[in-house]
Length: 288
Ligand SMILES: Cc1cc2nc3c(=O)[nH]c(=O)nc-3n(C[C@H](O)[C@H](O)[C@H](O)COP(=O)(O)O)c2cc1C
Image (cartoon, rainbow, N blue to C red; front, side):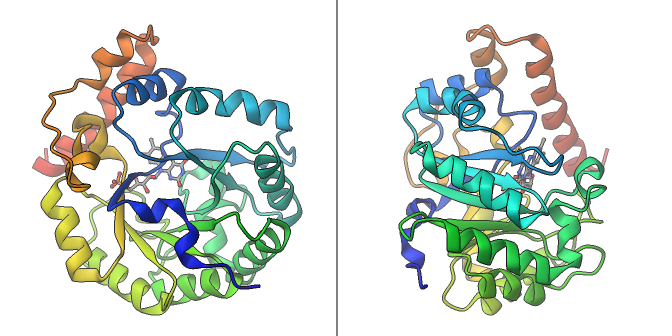
């Protein structure tokens, strides 16, 4: 079955917010929704690595804060067992609440990769391909299916990981240029990896991801790699109008997400988690 690659609503934008497990709390979601900072949600992963598949009731509960914002949702699924990943994706679609499914083959956290899921699966590209094929077979033709990839496990091989995704039937690839082992460390040839990913993907569109911190970073990444658009995560926390600015909207509001979350009665721990990530990114930039 061929599914139109232009079907995915994520392709409407030059920039989208990448998912962040542990950061995208209900208070974060409400604050971003109230301030209309996001055009389309990609949720952090619904995990099936433990063997249990979330019920539709649990799924509805987890999606509730996103739904309150009225912003369309692509839901992400993470797992290594095709049967469970298919079940979870089907449950999500059957709720009628999501605009698309994204499969996570990019998480480098040891809890996830220790279970053989996320970026660890990039060592078994035949499994990656078959998970995508099975999910694609099960979902209605009208439901867009995208994947989120890193460029390998310990060695970067963007062509191979992208080929597995394309062969499996992914309609869109979000490509974070680091390998699993590179975690979040600096990488010199990251954009070249994206360029190779784009080349290997052929007609399947690629959203580039990794360290976009400004409008000019996004413009240059698109121009130099040929990726269709960009996804960004960490920079949004300290610069929440960045997605709007990349998308060409004139939005010069000075927004402190922590303060906005406080006004949603967020626990201080959720605000501190954001502050810590902002500091980490700033110290990586200055080398301090
Ligand atoms: C705290 C945190 C949680 C994350 N959770 C997810 C997740 O649930 N799913 C996913 O695909 N990527 C996840 N990511 C990765 C980001 O979506 C993104 O690929 C990565 O941070 C690189 O983009 P950036 O340099 O713009 O931050 C997470 C990243 C961070 C920092």
